[in-house]
Image 1 (cartoon, rainbow, N blue to C red):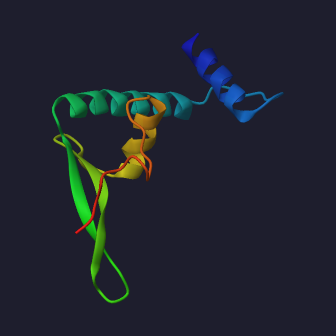
Image 2 (image 1 turned 90 degrees about the vertical axis):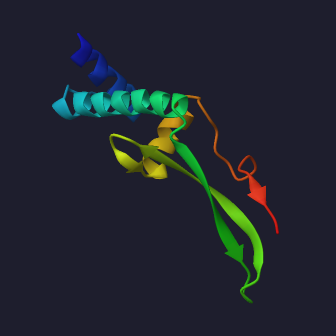
Length: 107
């Protein structure tokens, strides 16, 4: 039954009048995402996220600001790239990342 549900949701995500058959890769993707979500919960609880500031300079080499960069230092997976965990965190509704909400500092 779970396999049929996975195929159904895959078909729904692909648009109208679409037919999908269960593929073991569907289950693997769901399992990997569930592990990532679980890890994110633990990471938030255990304060495994780090904030780094990257200097921004103008064409003359003068410091004009800084960009805030979030990194997840997972004890099991190591340094997890933002491209891997931020979309899952946003889809889960845990946080929203945008240029307007990111911390910004000026010299």
